Structure formats: structure tokens, C-alpha cells
Amino acid sequence: FLISDGRIERDSRSNLRRLMREMVERNILLVMIVVEGQRQSVQEEGTTGKKYRKKKDSIAYMKEVTFENGKPKVKQFIEDYPFPYYIILEELQSLPEVLGNALRQWFEMIAQLQHNP
Image (cartoon, rainbow, N blue to C red; front, side, top):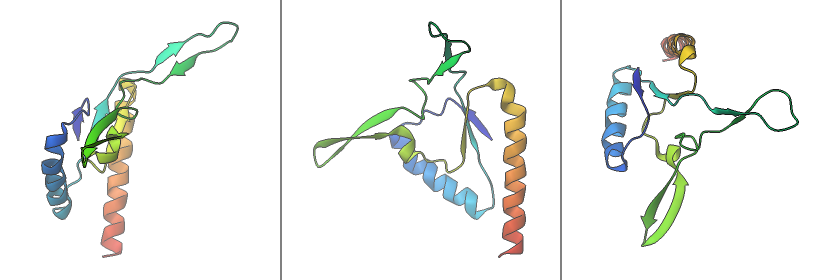
């Protein structure tokens, strides 16, 4: 597991993809855990309960601009993410459960690969 804020510079992504391919070839699973903190809760006038506002600085909603043939192209930050397995963690208290689920899924994948080579 790799724990980070998930922001990766564009120049580093190709090297990370190469490393990820090498890890997969060696049956090593790397899961990026992106710790972002909780969404903001807001109380709207005249309503009961809480509503949550999405975090604008979340990597799930971030956009980046690239230039192709001199023209700007806007895309989601996560579209070109070098980690095939990642978890965006908003509540730090859920980390043990999230890690347990990730490990369980990894064991299931390995078992399936061994039965279907």
C-alpha cells in the first residue's frame, strides 16, 4: 500500500506506469490510498439532516490542461492516473476496513488466477 495525497506530476507518470507494469509481472499488487479528508457538511436552511458538498480539491474532480497541436485540451486528472488500483479515502477512521477489503480482493484475484492460468 502507498499512502499519499495522490497528486502526481505529469512528468512522473510514464515512469510510474513502467514500474507498475513491472510489479504486475512479478505478481506484486500496489494500491494507492489517497487520503483527502472528509467532505464539508453543510446545513441548508429549512431542511433537516446534513448534506455534503463535494471537495473541490479532490483528485476525483480535479482537471488539468494539456496541449495537443498547440490547442488546449481539458481532461480529468484521474483519467491519466498511473495507478490501476487506487482508493480515495475521505474518512481516516475507515482505513482499517478499507485495507481489509483491499487485501481480501487481492487474495480473491490471486486465487482466481491460480485456478484459471
